[in-house]
Image 1 (cartoon, rainbow, N blue to C red):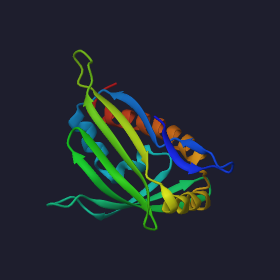
Image 2 (image 1 turned 120 degrees about the horizontal axis):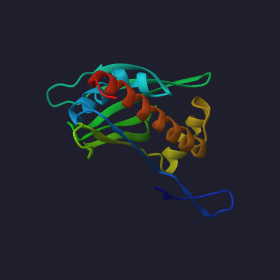
Image 3 (image 1 turned 60 degrees about the vertical axis):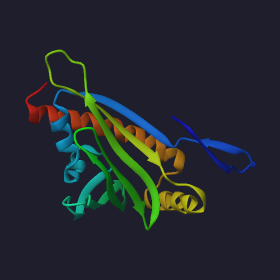
Amino acid sequence: MTSTDDSPDKTGRAHARTRTLRESVVVAARPEDVFAALSDMRRMPQWSPECVGVWMLREAGGATLPSFIGLNRNGARRWFTYCEVITADAPREFAFRVSVAGLPIAVWGFGLRPADRTGTPSTHVTQYWHDLRRGRRGKAADLLGRVAAGTSPTARVRTNRSGMVTTLHRLKAAVEKEAGGT
């Protein structure tokens, strides 16, 4: 999906900017099992090619959803993000909002639904990314992304799409192995 960014480019014309990505995979496991794996954010470094560590700040409990620091890398570049879980609707959806230095960056999430595979419990998993970088603060976040992660907004979309495919395939392999599937 593509959304329009109303800010002008160097020629003064408004340009399109990809603001949302979605990638999907079918996992041979029950939605409850997939959700349990995804909602344990300490496991994200197993799957994500960019996330190398997670430091939990607030565990789930009571009325509060967890928050955590994501430790990331892109080649030799390293940075951290502050993340707050915003949706934990077992076993349907898990999502978190990402910010850096108080600047909104993105929402990352996973939608889950039973997949139609006769005789085998399976889950259709869709990972999504929504870019939150807008306006003046968005321009500051874009600059920070160029410096810290080494990616322009356009390169970030390519990096995220590739990373989502890798994440979903690694998630699939890990959860299917744990579930005894194929």
